[in-house]
Length: 243
Length: 162
Image (spheres, rainbow over the protein chains, first blue to last red):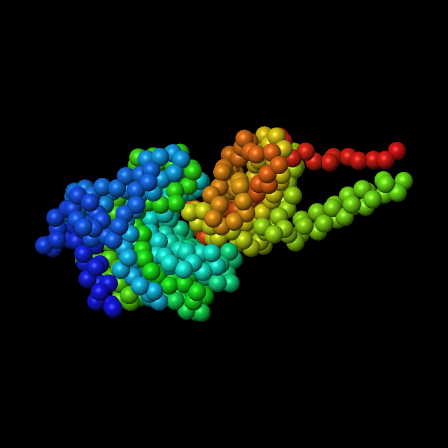
């Protein structure tokens, strides 16, 4: 089981440009059959593969919202299957989102279940938003946690320094479950943030990477601005180091 | 006389609940009332809970106190003034169309920057949260006063039977 996910993960890394990989030829479409992702969804948005990527990779995935009334642009990975333990790591560049403030948010990643529990289908999700002044960005991490307020565990992690930022999440199912988050932090033993909670009602069936669930404020102020992604890698249990 | 007593009794109960609410109720289930031209409503988010862990995609692990009103020609500037706490952060207000973690905020204000409340749907219930900058420390909190300049719903200023 673990091998399967890792193989696909490498393919996804290859999609976004894995240095030294024989797969480091940029596909024109990130989704199958030319790309490695299971599918894509572009509605009021744009999704392109561009070159070069980050950290010597060949190519990256560029996403933007182009409609003021709705918008999403993301790829989907269907390789997870009722996973009770899930890790995902990716690079994201949000530098183009100038002036991003607290009314402006957009989702970057979600790991989801096909069978929502307590009306929550996103097992764990990562969004980006800005502070009141529009001078700093943070990631909002939220996960289904039965018994917590709104049945959500959540925390914010500020983004400091320049992009790309390296984000890794680990989600563990259990009545005493855990969500760990590393942001620009490659030390497995010291996550940037940890959320304990009852995650037992959820699993991970698929993951979505890109821009989705944009707020009205985001669509009003961040239209056509590109957020780039690279080096997505997902596994069941083992920590994902930098390639 | 009997007809007058019932409304007065009802008004008394409402006022009584309102006063009790100032102390106990501050979440989505029992939000505090906020009216046109309210002045210096005090609060302490350090002593509050975190009923809304997210405002849509904006994370809000900071504590908040929830107010609500039914819009009737809403056209007001709502301001928040920090009176203590808020170390390393800023007092903030958010206007929400619903009191749920999935609701994206409509507007915000900060200390020195009033939040304009307008262009709302008459008869609909809206929520205002007093909190701290979501982009600041997760534990950011403090003491504040909130004031309203303008119209939210019309409030009963005086009532007498002669």
